[in-house]
Length: 478
Ligand code: ADP
Ligand code: MG
Ligand code: ZN
Image 1 (cartoon, protein in one colour):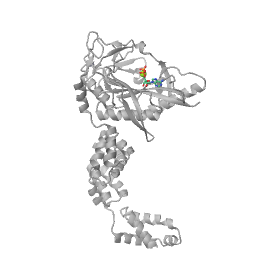
Image 2 (cartoon, rainbow, N blue to C red):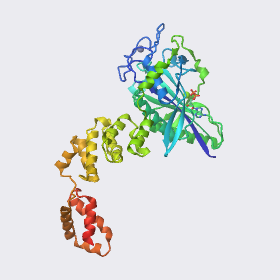
Image 3 (cartoon, rainbow, N blue to C red):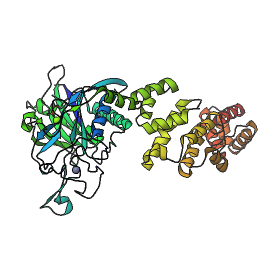
Image 4 (cartoon, rainbow, N blue to C red):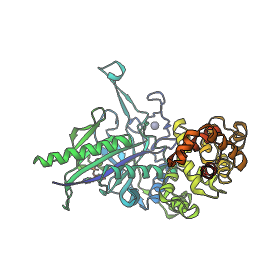
């Protein structure tokens, strides 16, 4: 039987507000355990939560960025469950009236555009963290750190529009890009600022109804997300082929063995006994507030990519790569401003600049090669002052020393030799030194041209204009 996968993602984004969602404790990561806590976020009786306005502000921002509808009236609900990292015995979340309703994201898969629907976005508080003693040489104990309790989260729920692990990956990439443009979250996956649950089912190709889904909890890297989905699709298909049935359950991805394992039966909404939180008044969102947030929206990645294609004549692929982060896009624009061929600048940014960025683990705006230096170097290629090949050496030197490209070329004697007489002199020397190859060439082994070009280039340390070397050689070998 041939099957098709159906996938919906629930993404939790930790907002980078200074303080928590319902109290003024700091949200800073890595503080001494339980130091960022107060009676509100450790759930003491009698305290009252107060909504952090910034949390709703950012939720509205994300909602507008994905084209969702902002609620005029929204409320908070209690989601009741017992767990040691949740001292109140309930999480304050939003149930039937989330702050954002609907929305969508555009992804590019194998050159084709696809729209993934967003069902809803709601605000909620994070729970604390359990640290199990076995990792600390103390297997009989577990420790509770409530620094994370009350840290603001947005939960972004997608429609079941995703059909493969590749599409899931693209969706997460795009979501992360948008969140970073909006500066609402640092999206640091290692620190848990971006986590996602994947709901996966399969159905025979052609069948309309969805199959039963399994939910894989808290996958914290894009690579593992893809692997977990691929494994789960295979598992469910094999199960159905054997005549079995998929049970609705929560599963965990086991990275070490690249498989998913059953964690618990899936809880239903009614298990949580949701009800409106009586401690928090409903939140009424006026049009002025929404318009205020709208006016703060930056140029978003898709719009920027469209503009790069129109203004700089870039292929869509380049535009999307450059616009994946705001700083890379800004770097490109700065360098491409006066360039004759923005596409050449794009090649350098996508290639060498992003390579250095990755190697140094730095941001494009902090590497030694500034956009102005890159622009100057590309100008030197365009004017024929250096060859494209030599430019690699120049770039490398700029990336280590931070020196101006002209200075590098001057100091290292890398200027392209374009005067005919000196190239002719080099060619004559090489031909005189290799009589056998010259004879072979003249006898018909024309492939030897490559050998001669290589020799001349070596003798000139790559600085001779390759085009000129080629034509002068051919002329002399006639
Ligand atoms: P819950 O909150 O109980 O996990 P939701 O109805 O909110 O359930 O759905 C959660 C996610 O599961 C959504 O992203 C949705 O698109 C996805 N989903 C729902 N049904 C299916 C299905 N049959 N197969 C795959 N994904 C599904
Ligand atoms: Mg779920
Ligand atoms: Zn607190």
